[in-house]
Length: 232
Image 1 (cartoon, rainbow, N blue to C red):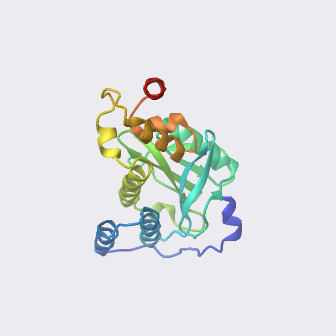
Image 2 (cartoon, rainbow, N blue to C red):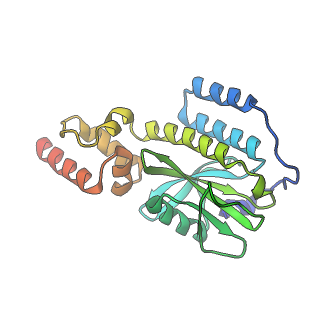
Image 3 (cartoon, rainbow, N blue to C red):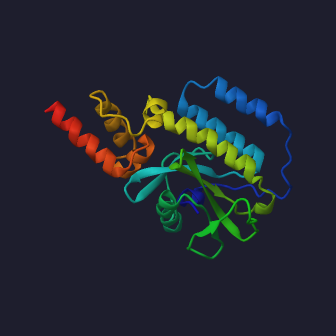
């Protein structure tokens, strides 16, 4: 799945994962004591590994218009490089918003319905879109090799992903809540700084920045042209 997998030692999880509601206490503590967003995301990934029994869970973010990096990873590796198969799946996922799986001995991602479908032992990678208001902010990439995919609790996986998505949203745009809640508001002079910050956080990918801001690419271009005229 990941190039970084080549330098990691994986512990095969041969025992079904069991957990109590104590994990909710841990989650509450992480969110209530949140100060540094990057640290909080790493803590949530650690919690995810405890609940799933997986070792290698990463968060994929855009590095360029068609390339993604593992900016956060439970193994401690930063800015890891994904394989071609995962890169291809991520490009598709940011547009389709689907859950995807990659099977052993296959390079082609396939659609996965977390409600109707069941994971099998032949799945080596599960990609979960981290969404907020119908926009994909990032993707949680889960390495299932050597584990029991059929025992993975997809509802908890989705719930933890939603918490990470909320943290990522406020990381990208400081006043995300206000800006996102009113995507069709009039253009204001003070928006330019937030728009440029979003574009910078998305590594120059304006399409992704538009999604983060709750705008269409056309609306983003219109706002930039208007704000640039005002600034000039």
